[in-house]
Image 1 (cartoon, rainbow, N blue to C red):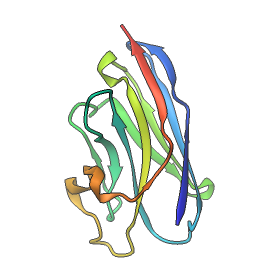
Image 2 (cartoon, rainbow, N blue to C red):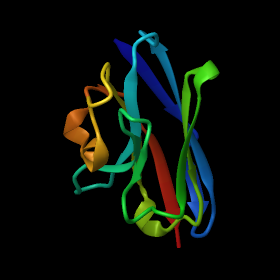
Image 3 (cartoon, rainbow, N blue to C red):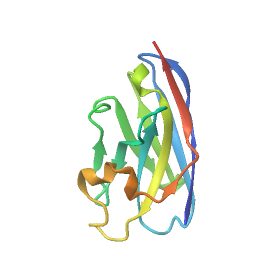
Image 4 (cartoon, rainbow, N blue to C red):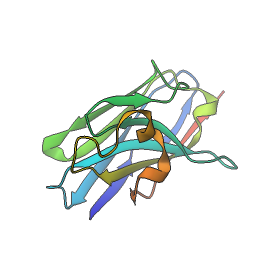
Length: 130
């Protein structure tokens, strides 16, 4: 199993930036697909930016060109750089992981589906004011 802890959320004005971090611990020797998801009040959880089992990044259309996923393998940490934030980006942001032992374990845009993941962090709140 893997444990995930997010940090870096906060309140920012529209147009501002935030960087979220997700520190992984536990069974980090195994190969995982990981990504960022968000859930606004009254809405379904949605994929934001994810890495599929081929290491390809997939982004929701609403964040393309604004949000960037990166990772530091040595620190077992996943990052989400969020620029040009909008009020509609306000949500709880979650880091998620799924064991991906094979290249074809989770590929393409299906990696944006939250149902594919079985390890979740506690979330970090992002609030963007206009």
